Length: 214
Image (cartoon, rainbow, N blue to C red; front, side):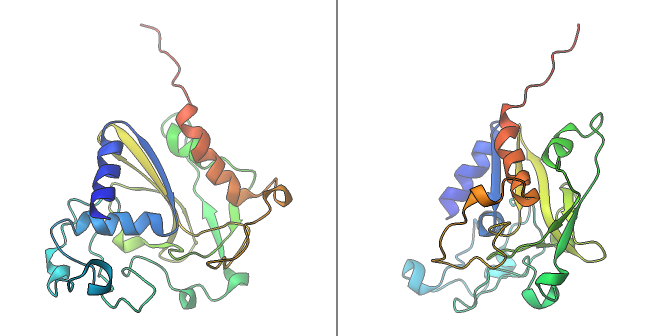
């Protein structure tokens, strides 16, 4: 994981664009912060985790998150306290997030990434559902959150010459998609606002900057 995360970070720094959802968001960032610590228990790598791993985290090496606390129990379905827990959402009927408004003139990239036909979108869960606002680096651009809470759904950042976007949750049209569940039939959701945000990120690398007159 450390090698994969480091390669991903290098790709971004050289001008690449990375889009990640669900646990591909915080797990990579945790691995980057733990580049000098063993945070894996014996069943994963053959030796016990470093009991001092929390103190050895290097938040200067992570991309989006800081000051988080590791979950060192391998039997807990969580990596750290970055993720928002289900009991903090108060059920599916209460789960909506709101897109921020950006100026196309001053913030063209967030403007492209938040284009949608609605600005309030039904939430959805994942192994990583949302991000705790107080653990997000100040350099990040928050693009969507649950209003009135510390729960952030959609983030964008830059590193080196490249950019990255993190989107919490697994499947915008399957609220609690579980491992082994059948794939969602995308033809049934042609106008899904949640999928639209994914499509924005897929199309984003193809966007060309207009040449300026010199």
